[in-house]
Amino acid sequence: MAPVQKDIHSEMEAQIKDIVQDLFKIMVVTSHYDISGRPSKEVLSNSLKTLSTSLQTLHSTATDPTQILPSVPPELVKYVEGGRNPDIYTREFVELVRRGNQLMRGKMHAFGTFRDILAEQMAGAMPELKNDVDRVLEETRIGNSASGGPQSGSGAAGSGGAGDADGA
Image (cartoon, rainbow, N blue to C red; front, top):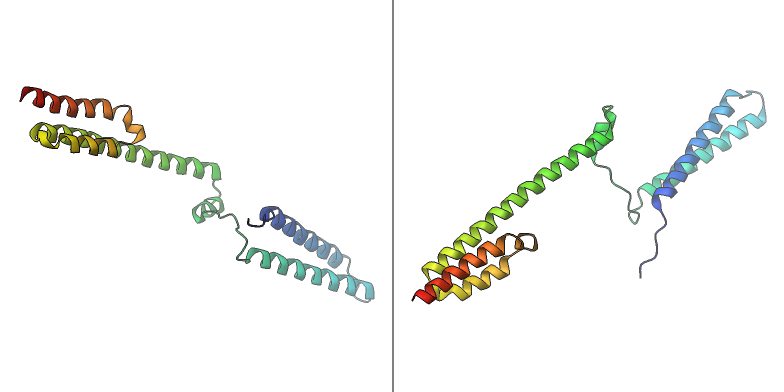
């Protein structure tokens, strides 16, 4: 089993909070900096070293190839940088996907209908292929189209073939 990865998001959030805290400490030290005072120089020097270490840690975490960071689409970043609401981006994206799904569903339905009509015509024109046509119909049915497609398709192909066989 693979080792359990720690939550990278929480780790990076803590590192960023540490960096903000280090920057705040540097701001306080510089605002009260005493040129002649030895302790001020050491405190500022230590604060800068701590900030440098924190930044290096964050950089190494962010560039670690074993860590999987959440990816944000560049379009969403541009959207937010432009001052727009990310919820609007999400809504537009979902609408686009919904339209694409409807288009694909329509194509699948059209091809299913074409398949059923072709099977009916082939079974009627060439009764000797009826078993093969029925086998192809059963193997090419999709679960979603089984509610409407098989009843009309297999009934039409079956009745057309059976009618021809009975009539012959």
